[in-house]
Structures are given as C-alpha cells and as structure tokens.
Length: 109
Image (tube, rainbow, N blue to C red):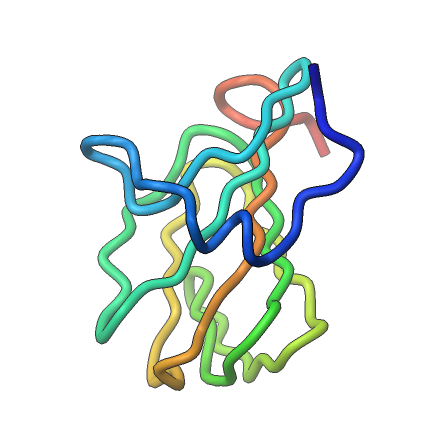
C-alpha cells in the first residue's frame, strides 16, 4: 500500500539500503520516492532512470553535465537518465526528495 503522506521526520528516520546513498520511502509503478541528504561531498553517479530532486533544506550548487545552477529550498531539479550530476558547495543541512520514474534509459523527449 502506498501511503498518502510521508513526512520529513519519517524520511530522516529511514535507514539507507546497502550500497545506496538514499533511503527508499515508497514505490508505485515505475515511480520511486527516496530521501537523500549527503554529508560533506556528493558521491553519486549517473542513474539509469529519469529523476527529479525537490529541495527540502539547504543551499548550494547543482551541476548537471556542463550546467551549474544555484539551488535553495523549494526548488526542483531535473536530471535525465545516465546524465552526470552532483550537488556542490552545499550547506550541511542539504536534504532532498528524489523521485525516480519511467523506464531504464529514460523517457523519450
């Protein structure tokens, strides 16, 4: 069953899966909702599905390929499947909802 509400408190209490940098909160069809709160540096590698980050807390810079943009709470960031990306120079309180969706390889434009 997919919950109607997932709170930040619930997300922060979830354990990371072995080998993953984010905590899985729910799945529905192709959609996964995860919680990501890197400390110090962002060690992630490109993912095989499209994703959206929604910034809950923190500020810094987001790099996607050759693009570099400032972010703050409330912002949404999109990354296509297999595209290099990372958070840089971020505040210690960085926390984001991560939504993975669609097929492996990403959706057609």
